[in-house]
Length: 204
Image (cartoon, rainbow, N blue to C red; front, side, top):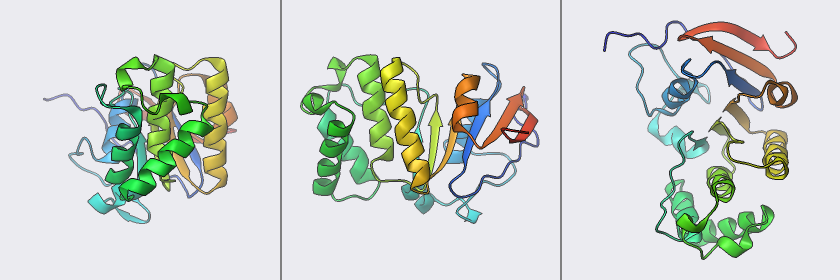
């Protein structure tokens, strides 16, 4: 309607950087991430990725974990992950192999044949996280990556994010816990009521 969600929210993040987007509930963090992915078109301004205005084919080089979890509850875990891998351009056989490897890595090999609706919240979060990253995307956009995870699994996901950064992936993440921002991010963007109020390196 007539309400402006964002006005002049601009930022830059370089290859291999990690940007934390912070702000109060309702400040616009999730809407901003959706704009970056193209889920919500902006009325003005430009989203530039990989050095050029974002196009549909750029999405194959990106991974997005939304705040609202969206995996098909009546399918098996392996079928869902294979499907997501195929959406990102992997041959189905390769996608299935990678999915099984990732499930082993996150200590969930036993759930491959389970229907998704059998998973606990934490299990479901890990499955969707590895579905997001299993093609090694160059740009990863994550909304609340630790939601629903216990401390052990929070450490596991955090370590995988560090590994992805070391492999050259760029990461944009919405996080509430400020100690995680200090630990994980290079740069910080704080928004409030649709306006940028802080932006720069975490040390700054």
